[in-house]
Image (cartoon, rainbow, N blue to C red; front, side, top):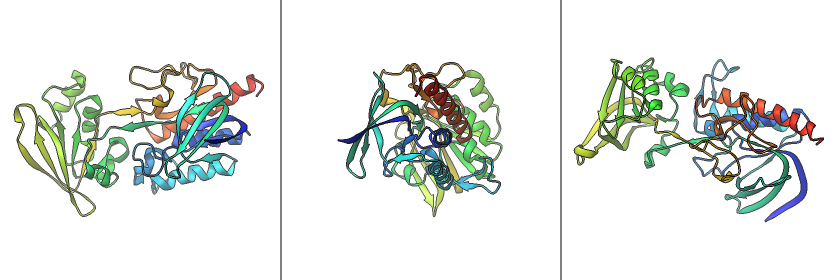
Length: 331
């Protein structure tokens, strides 16, 4: 375990839109932030650059009328933060001690096999949330090439195509309805006949003529057509156990996985107040958490919008709140 005696004014955990926007604002405020980028590049759930690293074309981020690739957008964010003096450290925070200031973070870089300890007077938590996946090998292979977890982000790419939404909660119903604006047909696949969604959301989806249903079914496999999706293999559950069928969605169909998200808050244990779902609690409209000197930005506390632009706005708020707090502490 390596480290030095430097105590940073602010450490930012995470390098998605929230973390990098916080880094831009904090570095322009001369706070000399250090940004811990996240898991190594072999990880699908804890990527440097966040979930946009799994996205191909981004068409809804202001300032890019022709669209931009997700990884390129994040690289531009990072370059802008570096320009103003942000220090970047590769790796993930394996352990955080928030019991006293300065706070202590233990960083692991699994790719390089190194460990490091840093200290900071304040922390901006921008670790995000990870979409839950079905666990199929092909699912990870075709992320960004037909498989996605965000209808708002990617729905427009499936204009006049057949898409499938997997899930039975409010998010799945909302995404299914939203996708009918673009897709020629939307099929909802759900492992039961009962739904976890609210009655109004379910009834709205049932009334939509462009939505079809495959109940007591799970997606067993994905059949590609060159780069995109052609068919899904469905397996029966419950009373339909043993049934198997092939669902044609090609050419260039889409699979939207809407079975929930998990906030990346495990490293904090019970040190920060959280909702039952694991999302960090913040004080009203601010980014302040229950630990003085610790601020939250992006999907780690926002389980509603989950957009790059709202995460960026939250990163701005967190940096401003952090700057004012450090000033009040004489730091």
